[in-house]
Amino acid sequence: MIRTCALTQDHRLVFDIPLANLKVDNQLLWYWVDFSAPTMAEAHALQDVFQFHPLAIEDCFHHLQRPKVDQYEEYYFFVMHQLDQLTLHPNEVDLFVGKNFVVSFHLKECREIENAWAKLTAGTLKMWERGPYYIAYMIMDQLVDHYFPALYQIEEHLDVIEENTRNQKVRQLMDQVFSIRADLLQLRRTVVPMRDLLYRILHGEPIEPFKKQRAYLTDVYDHLLRLAELIDSNREMTADLRDSYISLTTSRQNAVMVVMTVVTTIFMPLTLIVGIYGMNFDNMPELHTKYGYFVVLSGMALLALAMTYWFKRKGWFE
Image (cartoon, rainbow, N blue to C red; front, side, top):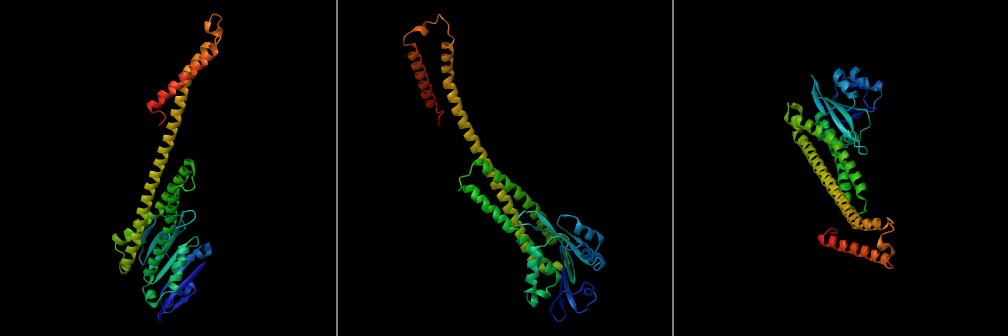
């Protein structure tokens, strides 16, 4: 789907202008063309109508280029990432930004672009007059703002795991912790390259038209810094939880091993006595005594009680 929006010389927003008329209509101050999940026939307009550089067009179709900005003769080409809230996988959003146009291109529907489009449509004349680079900022801002809900959801999940109100088993909690660590790593792979892109725009080679939006872009960059810090702190929290659960599991295993060792140690002399009296030699005098059976059982019981008392004094049961 291709849709168009343009600001005319008399400061009106007009929509659905044919692509062929955009470059020849002298009544337009600037225009925005959005390619949303375009067909191959529609995508050919990037070359046939706008005549963008072949390398930039190629990047639009290569899956998940790293976020970047490339400067061409009459425009800048931005590669950015939109985050899927369900899978946390990034989707590429490409922008061509010139002095009087913005062309956005994304192979999947993008809620952030929809929000920026709606915000522009409901905006004021002052917003419209800020031009294409302000629209580029709005799109960046929407992309970054939609990183937060996924991270907040992860934080809530971590709080539930830490409190363990459902009394889940350690193995289940460990599985969830490792799953969250994988999600945080996936999220970090999206946030950090976007942070580097904003840093390059603000502190790298100067993009002259963006100087008017520097304060706005700095705000977006601050959001990305906060996102990166939250991701790192949550990864540290998952590492602490993992270490705590591993220590708890090890402690429980040690307690079980102590009990098993005590039981085995107690039964070792008892097993020896039973083994000796189970040899059935004819010349064993104890075998023919009247109360020999009860004496041996009593001795074994006393021996077991004595060893238990001794182990308890040694602190083996603590």
